Length: 429
View 1 (cartoon, rainbow, N blue to C red):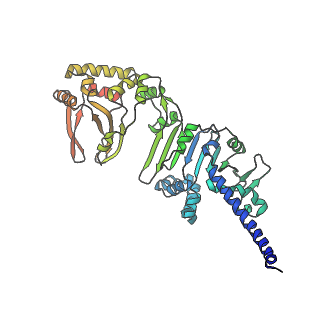
View 2 (cartoon, rainbow, N blue to C red):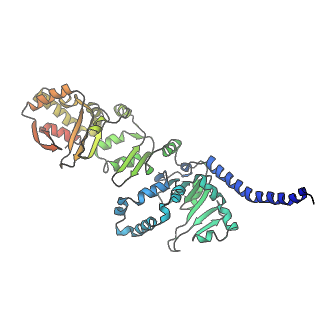
View 3 (cartoon, helix red, strand yellow):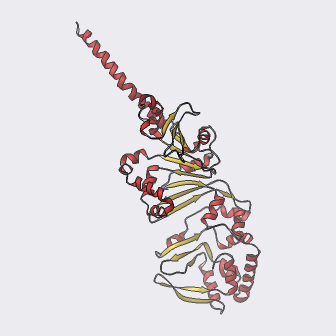
């Protein structure tokens, strides 16, 4: 037998082994490449009609940040949430949660939406991880015992659409979750109807502009969408009344608000971005101003425990917008103060206050004293000096030097009654 004839069986065996090993490897590489190249936007799988929408840039990072927050322990201290508290403690005790493998696997974007009936849809952008999920429907045939290891998990091939179903817990009050892969996404819903709605093409409840905003880079822990008409009163401390309500009535919110929330033990940062327009010319001009970082921020003392700063325009311009919204009482108070100031100081309200004020003002609370400190940017120091000399030179305006801010004794102006009445109409007390 020649050497060539002896080598033929070896070549056949080598080719068979290459096919046995190479085909699965090639298939796996192909699946991974498909998952990387053909990625889908999670926002495209959120059905319309949601009441709350949230997006987490990295589920792993969010879990890592949220689990160790002291604020979480405080929130879960109530007896009513004992079950949740136990779940959080159980998750914290799992070594895998702290591992590098979990960080890599859980570094996925998750979008979730809730609906008025209590239902929800969650969409996970798996990326290359979806390659394994593409093969999972074959698991019942290739490894029948694999799914049985996860109690309550099943593959339902005859359902429309074919899907995974997961029913954890006991029969009493059991909730079933429905899940299906869609491209590189895993769609999970609380009902069959919501799952079908999420998989239906062209049924996205998020427009292209908001979807782009959700994808925008940032360092927030959580990004969510909210109705500005609901969010603005909530952030301002409750339902708006009087002038604030009238001003809001003149503003048209052109889109949902994109809210970024960043969590830390020493700070909670909130950033809100939404589009607005107005048919009111003065208000539209104010809203159209280019936003800049107020220079007053760098001048706040280290003792400032909190502050509120408005830098939307000079007070004279703001008054033109605010006066109609504040109503007749504010207009009457301003007219009376203007007339009285002209008679008492030879200066109307414009010369006494508005002419020298800049485009930034607000207040801050100091850890060194209980009373808030009001501040305002000065646009015209010469006009301010002339105004103060006239005011303090009269018997109507007093000066109180009992206030200490840090090591500095700050004179406090004691306004006459007619000025206090006007300032109270704009919320300065």
